[in-house]
Image (tube, rainbow, N blue to C red; front, side, top):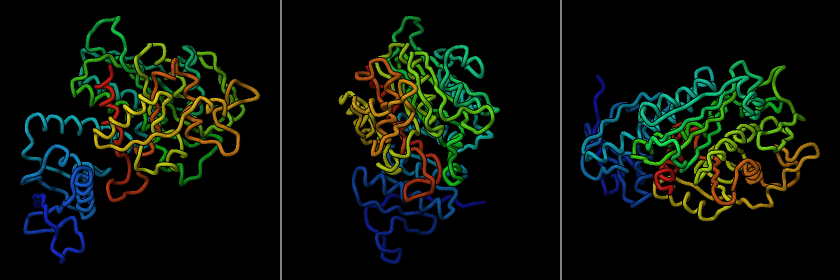
Length: 431
């Protein structure tokens, strides 16, 4: 039987024998975590210590001693998590409300990370929709209604973007429409509509990705997983507002049935789009979800997607990118991230970006063909064409920080769940 080591926080530096500025040291059956900083730095040091202990193969640990408040416990848990989920962490000493909060975080963010980490044989459009429904219905079965539109029914109902992107796969594309309405009133206004990109595997289509870039594309449904996890966390936190959730799900594959460069897609809101790159598919499926969300006349529309490499180039894997025309909306998002110890950063979005995706054959193209254009900003501008009153009531998250291709000092390889807490706070704070 593997021994359980106790984790103790120490405010003093480790003895020199453990190395210069060592974060961890060992004493009999005790692991000392040496944290001398304050605030965010303290939490990051705790998370880094957890990564070191996971890398050393220590599979059973117990939190003990003083100083382990909720955020310290959560920071350690995030670093200790790995994709195999083969670690056991015992937590003692949290108060009832803090223990409840920890369990809510763990349930929502574990689901998000695990779902993103699953391979495309297990997570495909229909199974992603069904898994999201199961998670949310388990939390509030009496307040949730849903429907899943799949295959040819998408085309019949006018959801042409999801249908076209997914038609090359044997796994039918699907859109989940889910209504969380705790009031039970049919005329209850929708406070927030969430839209998530659910590309369960992205080959790039005929704009084929190289193998190295394709290997991690099981994570391209990270937006759908993140907004679902955020709604789950908000419900567990007592959300009392009506929220609608739209997951736009497809596999982007190559076949004789796949959509092609030069195709023109005509959307339900009248906007036509020329396809210049089949690897810019996420915005094509999100367009349907944003049209559907706009029909609800919500107070706020939030979409989340692993949308562009340009956002990763700008911010790396540490920050999620935030876009919006309304400065106060962007400010709210940044403040929510800060309050939840997550990282978000604004990237520019101006009305002139909407004019940088022109087409000779349609109203707009799905990429900018000009030189020197801002790829993340023009992708956001594309989405704005499908949001009613985008200038006032819309936020777009490009989830640069949701997945790690390789482990680093804070995170294991794979999904991070980064952004779930930010979005959940925005839901709970929405008027």
